[in-house]
Length: 638
Image 1 (cartoon, rainbow, N blue to C red):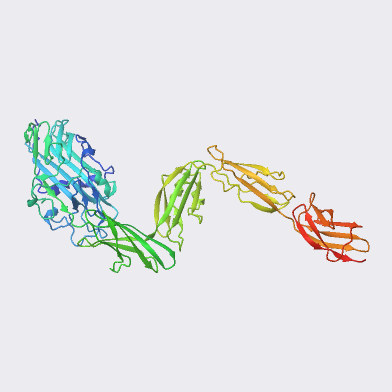
Image 2 (cartoon, rainbow, N blue to C red):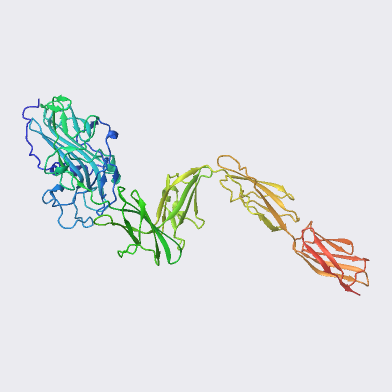
C-alpha cells in the first residue's frame, strides 16, 4: 500500500508531444548518449535481440537524413508540416515562415516517430511512456553542424513503493527498474520511476541505428490511418509492429510490481499487481522521396583546358532512379548516371577551368531532390611502415597532372617530434620517408592544394635488407673514388669487401659511402656490399659494383729519326703519372721503355737503331691503358 497522503493527480497531458518535452532539454547536454534519469534499467530482453533500424537515408536540405528505414523496410521522414495535426505540433510551437537552418528558423526538435502511452494508476498517479526517433540540436541552438538524431525510450511513473522493482513491458523490450523516492526530504514518501534512454547522440546519424527504436509502429487498421501517416497523434489507437517475444507482438505498455493494485488480463492468463494499455498516441510520416547523396566528385586532367569529372551518388535501393549531373549550374544535365541498388556513377567531360561544384539531381523524386558537392582532385596514395628500417613511407599522387598540386601529409606534428623542421609535402619522387616516427598511426591522411583528400591505412611490413652498391663507374687513375650504397633498402650496417683488382684501402668514415684512391694501373676494381637490417638479418642478394679505370691520355712532343747519327727520339706526356706508370714504344721490331716522370713527361733516345725512311710509323702503349698507334716518324738528316 502507498503511504497515506501519497495520492495526487497530475494534470493529464493532452498530446504525446507535451509528455515527451518534459525532459528533452536536460538530456541533450548528456554526452554519453545513454542516460537514465534517476533510474537504471535491467534489460530482460538483451539489447542485441531488439530489431534495429535498417538504413539511414541521404542527407536532406536541413542537414538531417531524408528518412530512416526500419527493420521491416518501412521508411519515415521528418514530419515538418506545422499546420498538419498529423505532425503533432502544438499551437505556436512550429516556426512561422520558410524553414531555414542558416537563419535559425527551425523547430528545436522534430520526429521521424513519436509514440506515447499513458495510464492512470489506481492510486491517482500517472504512468507515461514515450518511444521516439528524434531530430534535435547538440547544443540546443539551431545551427548547421549540430544536427543529431537519437532513439529514445522514456518512462515516468508515479506512486510506487520505494526500493521495489517493477517490470515494464513495451513495444521495444522488457525492462526491470527499481523505484526511487519522489522527494528525498519526505520520509516514507512515495516512489517513482524517472527513466530516459537516449542512444545515438554521439554516433552521427548512424548512431540512432544502435537504439531500441528499430521498428516503426503503425495503427493496427490500415483503413483508419491518415493517408501518408502511420497514425494520428490526437487519437489513441491500437498499434502493430511491437517486439515479437516468441508468442506475440508487445503492442502494449504494461507495468507489474508491488502496490499496483490492478489485474491484467492477457492471452495466457491474469497477472496480479499489473496494469496496462494497448492504446497509443502515434505520429510518423511515410517518406515520399528517396533523396540523393553526392558522395564524391573528382576531376582529372593531363592537358590544359580539358578533363573529366567522376561523380558518385547514392539513393534508396527499392527501385531504379534517374540521377542527373549538372556541372555548370545552369539547369542543363550533362549526363544521366548509371547504377543499380541505390549506387550510381557518371563521368562528364569539361573544357576550360575546372568547375567549382557539381549538382546531382534525383529527377524521379517529386519534387526533385538535389545535392551540390565541390569538385576536387583525386589522390591515389599508399602508406607503409617498415619495422626493419623504422621508416614510414607515404606515397601519393594527384589526378591533376597539369598543375601537380602540393600534397601534404596531415598530422605530422603528432607523429614526428620537431616536425616544424620537416617538409610535410610529398616530394616530386612521390614518396615521403619519415624515419623513426614517434608512433605508428593506423591511418594517414593526405590533402591536396586543390582540396582533394584521402585517408589510407598504414600497412605494416618487415621488409628485408637489400644491398645496392651503386652504379658502375669509370674513373681516372690516381683519383679519389666514392662508392655509394645509400640506395640500399632497410640497411642498418654496411660491409664492403674487395673481390678483384689491385688491393686498395677503403676509408669507412661514412660506411654507406666509403672512398678510396684508384691505383695507377689499368685494372678494374670490384667490391661486394652486404647490408644488415635492424632485425639483424643480412642481405642475401649478390651485390657487386665494378670501378673501371679510364686509359691515360698520351700525347707526343717529338717523334724523329736522325739519319746522320741513326738516332731515334720519342717524347711526350701522360695525364697519369708517378711511380709505376711506364710507356712502351714499339719501333722497327724493337721495344723501348720510358718512365713517366712526376710532371707527366716521358722520353727515349736510342742510337744505332735500324734506319727509318719517310712514312714509317711507331706505336706507343702506356701501362695505364693509353695508346697511340701509327705515329709517323719525322726523318732528319743532320
